[in-house]
Length: 303
Image (cartoon, rainbow, N blue to C red; front, side, top):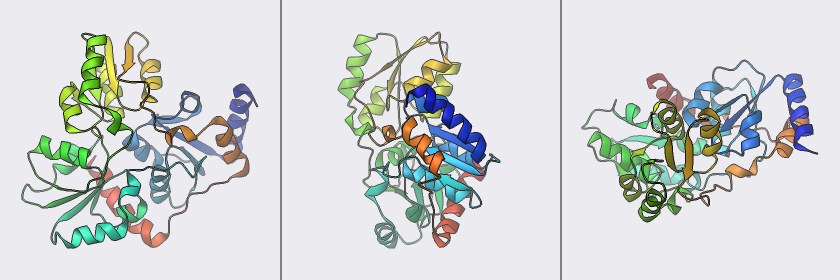
């Protein structure tokens, strides 16, 4: 089917199913364009609790759809391609986290939202890249913190707050492709442009940039800034939203090879099929969901 036919079918099915479509900023441009709401993990976590639809179709990776299901136990949550995973989230499991916690009795366990439901269920608090600094600032300075799974986001927030966390050595393979040398090369090619990178990047990359921000933070910064040229050090899917929202400004990727293959698994074809057949429902066991929900809701209450 042509994109126009798929778009028409998705629009019809959305009404018939009383469904809402949420899409992450890293999704394909055509998927973002057809979504009801586009955003980063924090924006979409909030939005998932505010919709009155019966069905939530989450165009993102699996942990995001899990989070939506945890926050909306009475709704049907679907994901167009259930194989769309997150390598970072898979770098730690619940058993490993329990062993890590055993080495640090008395520590509070904090997880990045890029984690499985089972890991969230073992944690005291969940954070996103958009709210991590604000949420982590609520812990007393003397409180020992275990931060999983992203060592780079954890190290970034610890540095901003002047604290030390026990970090799990997880990372995002896509953001790991960025180097400080690539940032400097992009600056040389586009002199005067503001460089924005994601806090999942390594410290030398963050240090080489002007700002380290979540994708939602990047969108806000670009919208409010007087600057006209920006260099983006994150997954290239964000360029669609930035260019759509800021037609008078220019956005360059540090490299157009910064692509998350899992984020690109959602297509108009499998989105339409998902709605047509009501397939790929995301279900989290209630004993896990109830504990994970506490960590997520504790975050949302602060942010």
